[in-house]
Image (cartoon, rainbow, N blue to C red):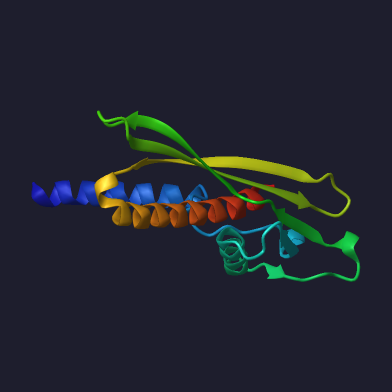
Length: 166
């Protein structure tokens, strides 16, 4: 009885695995860029910003060759990263009127210029809630810094993913 149930469950699991692999399903961690985007020029409003450095690293991991100024500027794909923005909106207050919780909106915009095509401008925002505690200001400042680093990493990964779909 147990052997039959084990056999049925094993067969069902094997069938699911075969169906998933045959339909082309794969996890979306690595993004593969089209051939015309395998070599691109990355520029930005602030080339020393953390997001710019993360994006540069993520593009190189996606097997993209980054070039500086090209001799023939019209024959290469260009990605320009605009300055990122961070906005805070108050969500709740303590009884004494101090802010208890914020909503952080991290905005990113970029422009992709490909040869013989119209430029593509993209903008997106990532949202996170952040609880503030005036009694633990140093710990909360460190938590905010970690949260911003996470938002930058997510934004960089999203840009690479969006580029793979253009």
